[in-house]
Amino acid sequence: MSVLLSYQHGFHAGNFADVLKHLVLCGTLDYMTRKPAPLLYVDSHAGAGCYRLDDERARKTAEARGGVLGLDWPALLAATPAPGRSLIGCYQKAVSPLLAQRQYPGSPLIARQLLREQDRLALFELHPQEHAALREAMGRDRRIRVQQEDGFRCQGLLPGVYKRALVLIDPPYEVKDDYDRAAELVIRLHRRMRGAVILLWYPVVSRERVRAMVQQLVAAGLADLWQSELGLQADNDGYGMTASGLLMLNPPWQLPEQLQQALPRVQEQLAPAYGFHRVESLTAGPG
Image (cartoon, rainbow, N blue to C red; front, side):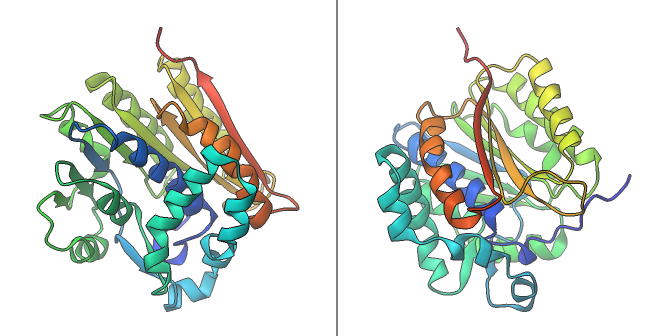
């Protein structure tokens, strides 16, 4: 299997890809926690949970400066219409306490913060050091189960005792097979629990692989599938991530509109000259 990129998130925490991913995650959790029924949150590749922005790895790449640290929150909120403004405000509230300490929260910490007493979190991380850091970051929280297992096998948790679920699939894409495995996992999860909300993050390193992954999901007949992207520059043949995106299955009904309003303003701040954004419906909703 050929290696596409070497991905240790400590080098990339808080970058533009995290901004998009966590905007979507915050908006999804904000909506899903408005209903009283308990919710299961599954994170297939949870990472270390929390990252320092002043350690050697983060300083080496300085990617957070072109991501979350490059956001002018007051100007961003002022320029964004109301539905999108609420999305940005939710994200700001989730990350600001740790940013003040020169840290950035990974998806598990954001989910732990936004979820309620009746909800549960299942976090998968196979790498021994990342798993150990994740356990420490999560602390003693009875809602959370941290598993040192392959997150591509997390479908066994669904449907389980919970009638509502949100699954974030966020593999490192260190090998080309990760694109196929990620799409296959979405399909398996959907077959087991058709109402589950599934968020699949991907890097745009090879547009061809992204297109193939999208086609695989569309061909599987998945209804209510959306695609959102935020890019710093146009696709090219060079090495590295020029954009990132999320494929969103069964997203909250208002999330696409929120993103359509928020992403142009985020892009204007992070990549005004050559950046782009996208929010598109790939398949119609059920019925």
